[in-house]
Image 1 (spheres, rainbow, N blue to C red):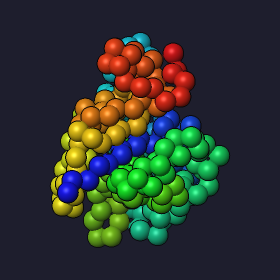
Image 2 (tube, rainbow, N blue to C red):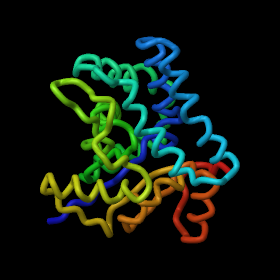
Image 3 (cartoon, one colour):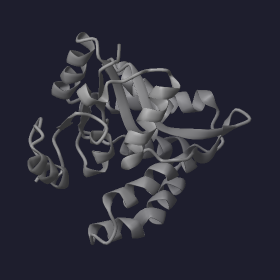
Length: 228
């Protein structure tokens, strides 16, 4: 018998805060302000290109998410775990969207597989999932060598179309046969369309303007107020 799944984005969907902001805050405390400032300065040109609508949200967010790995270069598992635990148990706690977390719990009660799908580091997303009852996590994997983070990711970065592609690959690798036509996806951004495309029940949550427009054209039910 196939499994019905419910896929949830993290930032803006289950939490109002942004994980990357918490990560930069943690890095500044642990590594000092200059590595974090370099990260900001490096990505500033792309930020202005995005504001001017010369590049897409995905082209901006993708490198930004991948390059967060620079700031964990050389860290061992205990240091990485410290970051993950602080994000999941301290930083994100005030930003919980209890209504959306309630939807995740409803799916658990119905016997559905609940999966967090995010651009963030897979192990961190898994720890976040533990705090709200998600059963599985799909994210971007860090490259580890000799027990330490190399400062790089294992491609691809999980964003846009890759959200749907990687989700299918990782479920198949675990031998989980999902009934995608009857499954659900919850997310807030136009960069999450790749996740919506693999399910029969897309559910935009507090969508950004582009996603809200798309949802209205497709007749998708919207949960929460659209950010127009």
